[in-house]
Amino acid sequence: MNNKVTRRIFLKQGLIATSTLLVPWKLFAEKPVNTINLTILHTNDIHGYITKSIAEWADPDFPPDLGGGSALATLIKQVKMECKQKDRRFMLLDAGDIYQGTPIGDESKGATIVDFFNRMGYDCWTLGNHDFDDGDKNVEKLISASKMPVLSSNTRSSKNKKEFPYGIKPYIIKNVDGLKIGILGITTEDMITLVPKEKLPEIVFTNVAPTVNKYILELKKQEVQFIILLSHLGFPRVDDGLSRRLKRFNKYRKNADARKFPNYTAYLNFIKKKKGFGLDDLEVTALIKNINLVIGGHSHIGIYPPYEVPETHTFITQAYSRLSTVGRIDLSLDKDTGTIIGISIEAINLWGERFKPDNDAEDYLRCQQDAVEKHLRRVIGKTETELQRGNYETTLGNVVTDAMRESVGADVALVNRGGLRANIRIGEIQEIDIYRVIPFDNPIHKMTVDGAMLANILEVSFSGRRKDSQLSGVKVVVNPLLPSGRRLCEVCINGKPLDLKKQYTFATSAYLSDGAVGYGLLRKIQRDMVKESITVRKAVVQYIEKKTPLNVSLEGRIKISTKATRADYLP
Image 1 (spheres, helix red, strand yellow):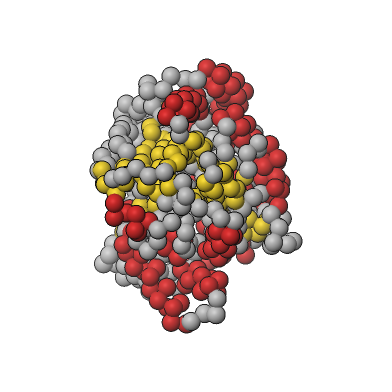
Image 2: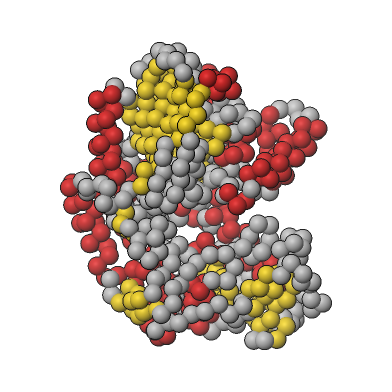
């Protein structure tokens, strides 16, 4: 397909986007041709949210209800009926991270979500990083239970990288009225930093770009005319600056061009090495031709209007996470060539008031939810201030790290902001609220480190583009304009400057202790109290029970100053 040519005859209709309304983005040809009409509904990053929830992002004070899986079931039936009436074909896809994050997902280790997918009639789904959280044997169980193909073209056997373990498929080909449509699955190549290696002894992950390129060529040899990348790579957030990201990425490409590599795989691997971490949807589609459409996940952002990659004219879209929205794509394709001659993309909010619950789905989900959540409904305390997550110091981060530090008697505690998944509103706090905040059941690991090592650990939190730290027992001053790895300007513990030779006790989650998300240096440190430790979630529950009512404020634990200089006592 050549989007660049066909785009000349497109008519563009605008998009209006607010927290409550998303009007479809559309491109259509001026003249009808011999077409196949296809409607795709897609989800991503559900994270176990198949039961009803509330949309705090829409209105923090009076959040509207989200209908969850029973609303999705109603939407699917409505769209299928519409497609039947209008002679359109239908697909239902998911881009990964299906279960981790709620009791209904975690207690069954994803089995309930897979069963729900089976009931909804999904065509296929791609493995996300959190789908590996309970280890490769659990992945095997999920795939065995899935009636639909499970995709990930870069997930391979550790014994033989040419083999796909557990029935994982790299792609599927759907014959739609004589038109071959390929759906290629891909999982983030940052897995080594996201899931401890010991959980995945039978699995390795190949580099994304060469893998995608290989299978695009393979699909083309099979005369596939339209290719969808069902991706769990992520997409840069708007505040990262798309043009700036592309400009930096193009420097890597020019550097690679100058070296005149003997083959394209070596070229792609060089670019990955220059970047230093996994490629995202934007970068992969800038490098690789013949991807017509990317349906993405991993970054938890809606991409509306869809992004059109300048180099390849591939369209990229992604729905919002936690089943707050469902993406809808209406395609009109040239029956002979697979060329897009019409496309409409929108996000459908699953408001409870908009979609009457499907009775069968509602009964099934209520039964599953009652079985796992009944014991989590007890009130453990209350808060007089809203506990919010975010960048740098936050009220929620202060509570969590204070609880961790107190529970094991450490001098300093640290947790990554990505481990905190929800805010807590003013009022009573139930145990299930803490589950939503901390869905990862990680033990607290305590270790003894000298001041120099502690400084190195803290430096990781602010390296690169990171704003990752939630801290207790320590106050830092950070200058983000200084070189990465040298941004800490002051570190004080109990009001005193850090002593590089002094021994400090340090507490963090087992997830970080195992080296995840850039904290590889922690793997080398001996744990002091692994056997005596409790989980982060349990520590927070006990802390709230003891300290209620909570009244939390920001204390200047992390100060940002673009004028600060590095103190002499730091390494």
